[in-house]
Length: 174
Image 1 (tube, rainbow, N blue to C red):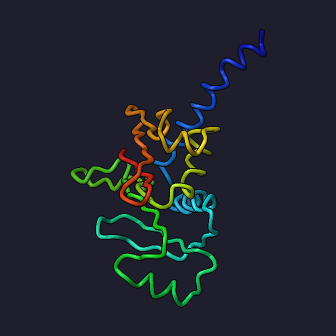
Image 2: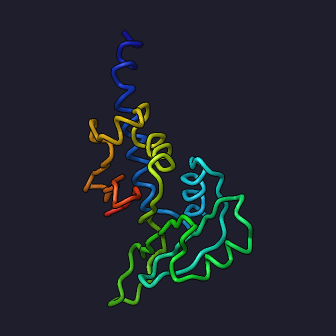
Image 3: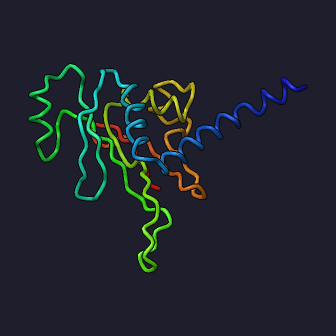
């Protein structure tokens, strides 16, 4: 009987872990932003390396990753362009939890994964690992399961894995 109960509860436990991870993506420390970007880029078909960060015109922190075998000279030239062509960017929104400018309260600075894009096969492995365990590449791309959208408004979770033109995006609409 205990085994049957555990078997029936296992899908619920896995789902809860996915939602907990999704929720954690909205409440990251600065150190955790790099850990999340490292986790996503570690599933790419090409080995990637962290190059640097900058703050974009929307006040988001952007971490830049390049293929590990790309010569440093080419990376430097690309990184100096207004929009890098050879890198993968991971954008994190700054959020001040508990801030109230009227009361002079700064709040606590946290970060939220906002956006990254790339090839389907690069992003699929990370999405499958955290939000759609066991789903095949073909089933996820066809979205037969509805697992390309993770949403729970009560917890500010609204993650999407979608195709935009020739690239795939992971976006957080929290």
